[in-house]
Length: 364
Image (cartoon, rainbow, N blue to C red; front, side, top):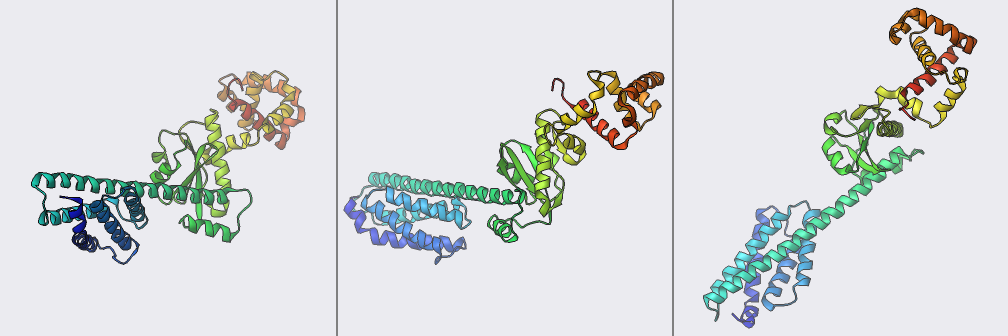
């Protein structure tokens, strides 16, 4: 079959393939007058013209890559376009068999192989365009969600108009309440999908920050990771929940809170003591100065006595020692601290300083 014969068949081939493609689109319930309908018509015209003329393939591949992008934007599966292409190829082949011209069967077989290889190349270009559009869309969504999360947790509250615009762009209905979760790792999109329930996530400072409006089964979703669940707060309190969960994750990573998935509300004392670096150390230096290097048994006894609200017997039981030993040490402590042991504020400061010292990792 000569190129001249193929070009002579061009009108017949184009008409039949267009009719087949339009029938297939109707079967799939797709519009013939929409953007993809016009695009497919152009694609068929270009594909048939290139096949019959032997013209450069690159422009046709670019057309089908664009069709693949449109498939994704319009919510179709790329397999639907491939099935239409295969039907078109079968129709074109049937027309060639009906009008073989001077071609002998062996030559027709060669043309068949070329035709279906050609269609595979077009389908591959469409698939590549589909995946490119999918990646671009994912990057856009990630950027929009990051902007929304950043607005919600920034120090200065955004205006209502700015927040609503960001939420609409990210297609995330603003909930009345939410909680922030800080998670070790940077697979934010995967974690948001796994959490479900309208969760959104982004990576900030090397960790995933997830916002969720629902009380989900986060421990199951986050099993095997370090993660800190912040408190459920009104929407306007998103920054507070974020800061608490962030600090809790930092304490996990420095071995000052347990590994695994933790509820930050269950560790508020540890968070309070660790919130501002150096403050609790300064407090300890001031209020524990009378101990001056004697922070072994005396410090342990003072903390146990404060926790027992000034009762000797419970303090001795906590220390696994004799009450008389506790009384002896308390006399020594009263010599060192004087009336501070009877002042409520001083006792609170002592207990906080001693608790922080007891929680500090060895060598810190």
